[in-house]
Image 1 (cartoon, rainbow, N blue to C red):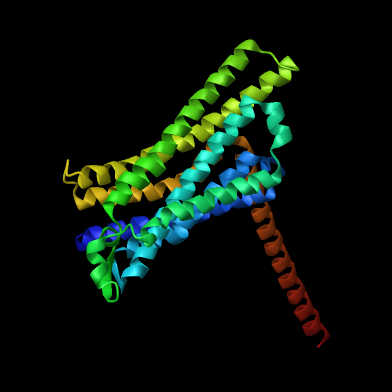
Image 2: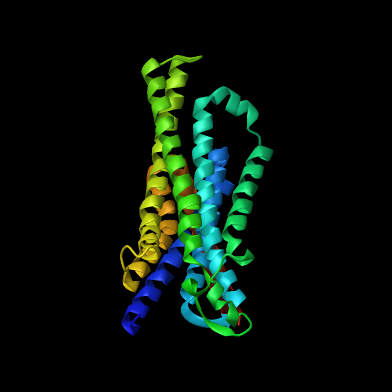
Length: 323
């Protein structure tokens, strides 16, 4: 990149990283502190927020570093590149867990409530992250650029494409680990909306009014979470499609286009907290509660400080009067 383009790219990455960190810390805080967000779906949302937070705190700085800005050993560069992939996989798996959870909740709500316990939830979250690490660290086990291994013991200029083999990125990471789960999630949401529509048309249940209310709430939440999935696809597919076109030499993709694709993929992690604020009422209320508490604490601190200052002034005045 030219110097001007590099400055713009780095500045945008910094802004995205700050947005990722602040927004997703708020999501995690909301889920942690609000009882209304204690159900399983929101725990998976928190898992997704952790992945998005780490994108801002770790993946974005690493992505900037592996763009030729660091000289390091081969395996250090490879590890840094793999961490970026791991966090992408964690996002995908958290989204998949959310889709499966929503589907099961609507498919058999009575059995779901009785069967799904906290231990199942934490097991699912652990599986999401463990599988993300396994799939993302595969290049460390040998699926990396063989033609650069001669420089393993020397210092190299760290580039993502210098150490990560594009056959892994295209054939495995994209087609198997991102595109396939995305298609599965879309099918699950289609089935979910179909089930909800049928139940609303029937208007049946143990109590018709309660049943209708339940399915209306499920549809609203499913709409919001499906939007999160659509935004994920919109933000991530362009980069992977460009990788595929370039790898199979169908089209020569310019470097600027790749950098735009990278920025778009990172921006996805900053978008989700905004979507929750506008589309998920429970999270929106939790945001407001947190911000009100913060504002209240600041006002109390200011009042205490003002009271202390007034007391000091009064004491000084009394001393002077006495003298």
